[in-house]
Image (cartoon, rainbow, N blue to C red):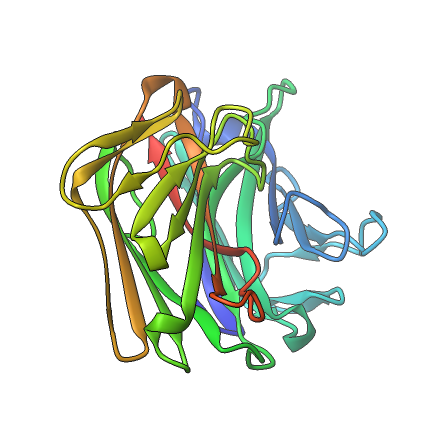
Amino acid sequence: GSGLTQALVFRFSDSQGWQNLDVVDILINSSLDGRQACFIAYSRSANTVYLVTDTGGLLPGLVLNGSGTTSNNQCSISGQGSSVSGSGTTMVLTLNVTFKSAFAGNRVFYMSAQDIFGASSGWVPAGVWQIPGSPATGTISLSQVNPGSGSGRTQTFIFTFSDTKGYQDIGVINVLLNGFLDGATACSLAYARTTNTLYLFDDAGVNLLPGLVLAGQGSLSNSQCSISGAGSSGSGSGTTFTLRLNMTFSSSFAGNSIFYVAGRDVKEGNNTGWQTAGVWQVP
């Protein structure tokens, strides 16, 4: 979703009961980096939310009793509208968050949980959020990825771009699915609009495998994913270009991954930069 203010709901579970959870962490940033981030820690036993400063320290805690606020340079959390509840194995943490306009951009939700014995889930990418701010200055922009979240081994994804000069101005679209912005051991793609050709990077994320013209047949594969020409296509109308990819993920690529998407024009004068566009869980 998008917006400056939102009551965000985070769910954590523990097979031994939600009371077995100790500290849960939520890090909102463009990458897994706690600096200049909206970095939140919640202590279940103390029913207290902490925000991390830009340099890594903890600000004074906010007890979730329906009042007060806590803020850093990226976000603030209001006690009003924030709460926690638990039932069975699930704990639900609701936080009324307001983002600062200076923190504008596409951000990723990373979550982790630790139990009272010190066992940890590790960081898991769990969602994306667009914080509005200054309008883009380039001609190209990413409109949406559909679906933007979900799970499955096989799915057709639709990536929609717009270009104020017309869709013919779009040159190359990049799609990277991984836990982090890293092309190694990833499903990393490049689509050349002018030749209607899709390329898949090798497992190292360095070399392009032989391209596939999207003519309704053939396929591309690396160890993480394959793309079938059947059901995949590129089409444009007016200022909008739509790239449809019929993707299948390998079982070895299981887990939560983030869609990073970028586009640039034919003269490479305008570039969207990498945008976090969605999350997908491979079972």
